Length: 75
Image 1: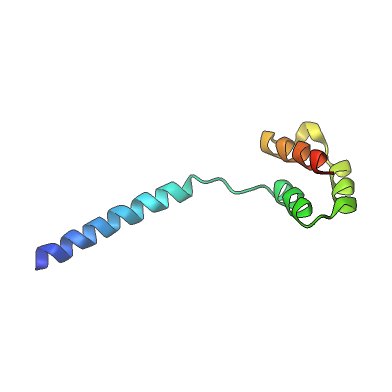
Image 2: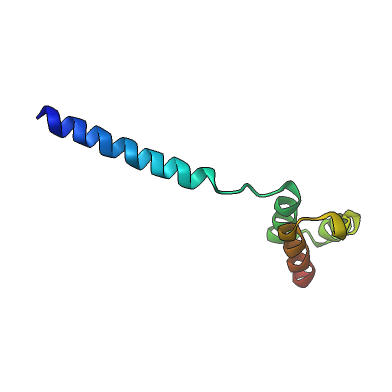
């Protein structure tokens, strides 16, 4: 009986370690990407046009550039 409790506890720690490793590698969305996707989802076209106009496309990351292009196609 004691062995099964230890075995269950060991399996639990292995799964917790695997899940924490899997989620620690997930990248968080940048603030720019979040704002773009939020404005697209809430149909805020005027605000989105103003926000996109204020951005310097050359300084954006690749993912932010992709969100920028998607936003333009949604307008």
